Structure formats: structure tokens, C-alpha cells
Amino acid sequence: MGTLIKNGTVVNATGSTLADVLIEGERIAAVGQALDSTGHTLVDATDLLVMPGGVDVHTHLDMPFGGTTSADDYRTGTLAAAVGGTTTVIDFALQKQGSTMREALEIWRAKAAGKACIDYSLHMAVTDLGAGDGSQGLGEMEEMVAEGISSFKLFMAYPGVLMIDDGLMFRVMQKAAALNALCCVHAENGSAIDIVVAQMIAEGKTAPHFHAQARSPKAEAEATHRAIALADMAGAAVYIVHLSNEYALDELKHMQARGARSLAETCTQYLVLSIEDQMPGESWEEAKFVFTPPLRERRHQQPLWEALRDGTLQVVSTDHCPFRFQDQKELGRGDFTKIPNGGPGIENRLQVLWHFGVNSGRLTPERFVGLCCTNPAKIFGMGNQKGSIATGFDADILLWDPKAEYTITAATQCMATDYNMFEGWKVKGNAAKVFSRGELVVDNTSAPGHFLGAPGRGRFIKREANAGDLA
Ligand code: URP
Ligand code: ZN
Ligand code: ZN
Image (cartoon, rainbow, N blue to C red; front, side):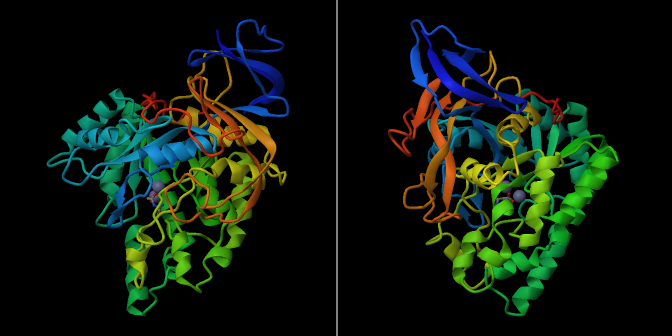
């Protein structure tokens, strides 16, 4: 006996069709017209879209950063993701300088144990290859790939904390090329930015607004070019995370045209929030929007939308890195360099992108599914298991109500922050029901915002090393 989702419109990245979907156990057993319902539990999806569950490949749960720890742990963060229609996340394990990747992996697996509400995987942020010739660290990269961690994160920002130099980055890229792994890069020129930051503080420019002023789009563009050029030299595929502005986009396009294997994501916030609207330089409240790269001027939004449409950008993620306003952002009152960098968004990605992307006609529903579900699953080596509604795939299924109206507010959200970046926004389009590996884990139609499964049910997903292959 299975669960039969009837009368819905199945939306995949490749097309939409009226079809039934049969779930048996944890998998999709059949997709087709008028499937026999005998013996199955029926779920009526009339007027609903049947989409793959969202895949958010950029989150920071329970992460020590900026003198504190991100506010969502694996329970609250993945629960919020599920309520918003996301069924898989890829979080970042951070290797500490002087420590090993193995240790980082164990720490992050322990954070997830007993808490993850949906399936998750990890990228490994490399900060150190060990003493001597680096062979110990390069060997660990092999071990990570064998563990199913097929993407490595490299920071070109945050000097003294996470930033690595070009030489180390290049060695990791060479090894990644040999392993068919993907290099994810935070592309900002951290050294140049730190000089500007110090100059601003010396001039008494300490308000949150100056966080954004200090990190120019040009610093991101320069690093974007350098990251792709180095990866190209090393023969590696590269994925630029949280690309936020038109200049960086220009560098990406230029390198893509030259044949460099370069992919990139943007994040929800860069598409709909701006310096003019959220950070005009008037109040401490603007600390809520201190993240990195920072918000950009409004004029950068349109090129990002265009790039999502024409395929220059392949993914929309959240870079969910939540800190409470009251006591965590507060650490930087009077000195923006001490404001923990990051913003909450894991719960609202699909709502915001649907409302401003699909409802406005910028994206088709199929492109939306491509950007939020299918492409991230494929690029990160789980495209045979997640990100599509097809026979044999995990039954991670989102019943999406395109007519549901919803007001985003911290008062009812599941994320552990005391604010929401989209506070008070009214959106149309919301998750109605969410299945994770066949289990109904969210029913926003009868128990809005409640998780029906048991924390800890989420599994670690081992990913293939496919060098970001989107085929
Ligand atoms: O401000 C941000 N984005 N915090 C998380 C760390 C990062 O750079 O992605
Ligand atoms: Zn980053
Ligand atoms: Zn991030």
C-alpha cells in the first residue's frame, strides 16, 4: 500500500504535465495518468503543483562565527526549511586551522545527529593542508570524497579566520580536479576589503551601513575572476557562491564564454533587497541586513534576474546564517566589524522566489524548479536521487499552492531568529504539503508551521563527485 497523489500538475525543470504520483516506501514508484488507486492512501492535489522538494545548497547551521554561533541548530534550521518546502540542505563543515577535515566532519555530523528533520549533506571548507608539503590535507580530500563530500569550500574573504591564499587555493583546486570534485568559492578580495574597513573605522564610520560600503562590488568581481581563472588553470570546476552584483556577473559570463567550467548561485536576498531599501544608513536596525557579500544597490537586481533566466546563474540558495538581533547582532553596536555576518532565509526562499520570480513573469514554474531543486541536486552530485519528480527518485515532494496567500513574519516563523528579513511581506504561493522520503512531514493546510516528523529522521546524503555536471 502506497500514497497516491492525484489530480495535481507535476512540474519538473523539463516540463509540466497533469499526472498522478505514486509513493511506495521512501521512493516515487510511478508517475502517470490515472494511476490505479486501489489500496493506496489518496492525497488530492487538485489545483496544486506537484514539485520536487527544494534543495538549498548553502546553509550555516549551528556554526561558530563572529564571536557567537548561528541561531538555528540542525533541528530548528531543517524544520524551518521543511515548513518552507525544502527537503534537502547542504551545510558547511568548517575545518579549523591547525585541525583536520576529519575532525570537522565528525563535529558537523554530531551537530546533525538526532536533530536533522530532513536529509542533509556537507561541503568541507578547507582552511589548512597541514604541515610540510600539504600531502596530509590533500590525502584528506580523497577521504572526504570517499565519504560522499564531493565539494570543497574556499574562502577568499575573512582574513585571519577562514581566508586562504591563492597558493593554497590553487593546490586544493588541482586536487579537486583530480578527484572530479567541485570547488565552491566565496569570492571577495578579503585583503583589500580589510584595508578599506580599517580606514572606515578610523574615520568613525562604525554603523552597519558601512559594512556594505566597505565591501564593494568590484572587490567581489576581482575575486570572482581570480577564482575562476585559477580553477581553469588547475583544470577544476568552480561554483561561485552568493554572487551578488552585476560586475561579478560580467566576470562570470566572460569566463564562461572562454570555456572555463564555472557555475554560480545567487541568493534570495540579493534579488529583492537593496542598500537603498534596507540599509540607507539611518539606523542600528540595519544590522539585521549585515551579511557578506553585502546588499547591493537596487540596479544590480535586474541583471541577476536576467542571469537566472538565461542560464548564466544556475541556482538560488539562501546562505542562511541566522543571528538574533537582540543579543547577537548587538555584539557589533558601535563597530560594524563585530556584527556577526549573516541573515536568516531558509524558510522563505521558495515563497519569495515564486512571488517575485514566477508571479511577476520573470521565471516560468519549470525554471523555478530548475533553480531551486533540480540544478542544485545535479550540480552537487545527487541528481539521481533528489530534485526531480520521477520514478525511482526519493519521494521528496512539495505540493505547492500557487494561490495561497501568506504574510511573512518573525511572529509565526520557525527560524530561531527574532526578526525576518522580509517582515510583513505578503506573498502569493506557498507550500501546502511536504513529503520527505515518502513521509508527510509538513501539512501547512491543517497544521501550519508544524513539523509532523521526528527530529533526527533526516539522513546524511553521500554525493557523487561529478565536477558540477548539470547534464
Ligand atoms: O554573511 C554571511 N554570508 N555569513 C555566512 C558566511 C558566508 O560568507 O557565507
Ligand atoms: Zn560566504
Ligand atoms: Zn555562506
